[in-house]
Length: 308
Ligand code: CP
Image 1 (cartoon, protein in one colour):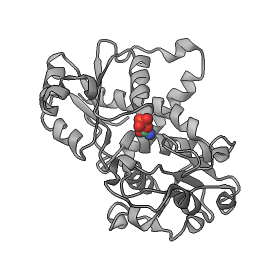
Image 2 (cartoon, rainbow, N blue to C red):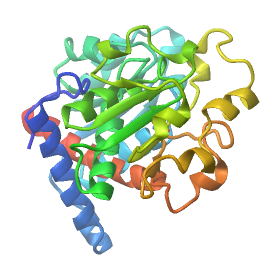
Image 3 (tube, protein in one colour):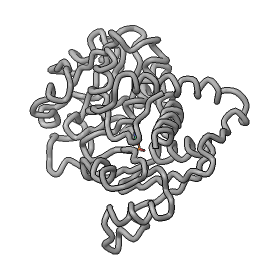
Image 4 (cartoon, rainbow, N blue to C red):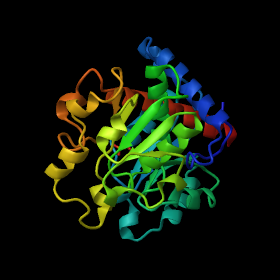
């Protein structure tokens, strides 16, 4: 099992620690598939975990809360929109106040890239990055890696096409870094205006010129939502045009391996980046990703509290 006190990104995550987290999360999923009693542990009894979210979330916030409760922790949710941040309190003062209440783990989602690292350097609590700006979303990448490993039996040699708004996607960044570390081949594909200037500075990725090219022989098609909240200006012609060029449909899927799986971190914009029938089809593992997310986040909570 990993030994880091914080989880700030996939960049600094050693392969051994990532593998240990995946193994632990996998074991939890097996245990939790049993009776409801099997989903109630005591490892973190007496510990306080705070979900501190400065951006909207359904999956990440809820799954951290469920994960903490399954381990016996007290979990508190703080939404910046309903906190004294709205009265001008700084991020650091907010964190110091939570620390004074003996919060031992702070799960932080923030629109500014680097916010979790900034906080981690200035608090005695463990900090887990729940998504920071366009930078990283490490637990999303871990849950995606776990989902692929459970569906395909391995990560080494698996071809993962990540398609859409790569430029603004912390999910794409974290997945590219983690999946290539673990031996998968990652292909990026998206509109020119939504591609990073130097994609290979992120990781050793392949670049596809079209969605057809990205899908060719792929094991995994991971579709991304356009991050409208981070666009800051017109970067695509129309939604219909985007869907026609970069939306996954049955014709494009036919280019992938016959057993290729469809992934999406959520929230899905149905009919834009992903055909709605495909989103609900047997090839879609989107809800498996969500289930894996609870286990991955529990494994991360175990890791950071053990190291604290
Ligand atoms: N994938 C993801 O981060 O979803 P939420 O924004 O709902 O947490």
